[in-house]
Length: 279
Figure (cartoon, rainbow, N blue to C red):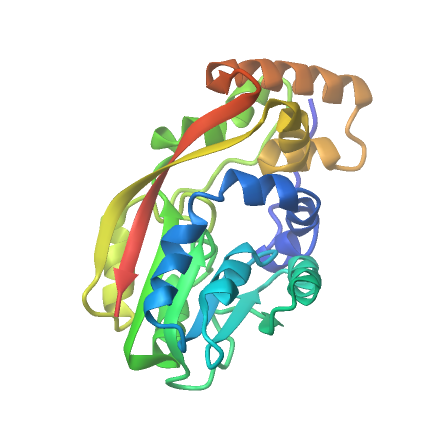
């Protein structure tokens, strides 16, 4: 069994193995989460000249969709701590002919101009702050008085069995880092009451947190790529020194464990999320 390494900081993680993995899996991930994009982007049609910030924008899928919906006076910006993902986002925007401002930065402490955005959105990007109260206070000062926040976050691990299948199946073969309850991490915002308290303490009003269930899928043929790149298992399999035999055993075991989600040539699951809005 492999030995656990010290947990990296969020900056180290997203500018290292996790960021690289998301870049390599960009097509797969965009397809997987395509049903969530319209939830954040479609309301922009009602504000075609808005200034919008996407927090934790990753490789730019949400920003590109917002850019399609903005009018000529509209402006979209994306911020992410991951330099590799921002580099890809810039390449994609250039190829699409979209004037989107992408910034490598930590939204927790980035100096945004006060009152500069009409909307702040995020798809799975706000659960990784070391100090979420500070982060949301910083974002609130960047929002105009009549502006709004809309963030999509994960609910609990128990409600998202797909997202933990790989870890559970691989645990007899690999030593994986334990998920830290409360984050920062994927399920840091599982507790809606905690999220409510964070937003209230950081100065937000009109807070609403409601369940959002979205059907997601990937091609069955993409499952080995998903397993070998993403999450704690993917990180362990890509680590230097990972034994080839162990790697193959883990891949076989984990892929078999996803069989309950296989429907023909697709792997289908429901993303159990929170839709978080505030102003």
